[in-house]
Amino acid sequence: MACIDARSVTAAPQPVVEVPVADTEEERLLARFVRSNGDIYLATYRKMLAKDPSIRQIVHEWNWSAFWGILPWMLYRKMWTFAVLVLGPGLAETTVLGHTVPALNLLIVIYAVMVSKSFYVRSAVRRIRALRARGLSDEELLARVEAKGVSRTGLVVGLILMLVGTYGAIANSIAAMHH
Image (cartoon, rainbow, N blue to C red):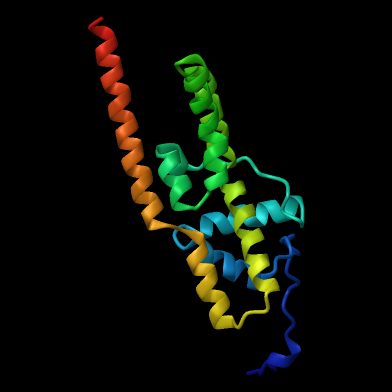
């Protein structure tokens, strides 16, 4: 019976897989920043990184959370500027015209849903890099990163505003039918 020396056996070469080079520390911090659904946002981060190392280019992906409630999603994810950009046209239409242009607002919201993950990842990475530049201790950096990513209060406020808006739209529709 022949013995085989494990040192003499060579493994078959593994195929080279192109994986975007990522700062694993940044990915770890991004996962802590995002909290829930971290794997989804890390995938978006990697796609953005593959397109452009500065993460300036967006990727178009569907975001079911934003689709089902864009306002609660934006407020939960602390996307204040994004909320103004998405909701501003509807508020301006109501102020100037006295009503909204539903088709325009629908297109704006659909596009916002498609870019929401990229905008959130870009915002998160910018905040994380700013915190890292401060030279904080690891413990303090993690605490601040976790505090910056989400707002449960924002989620509750967003849900309440969405419900009030929905109720108002239904009430206006019913009132319009009676006149």
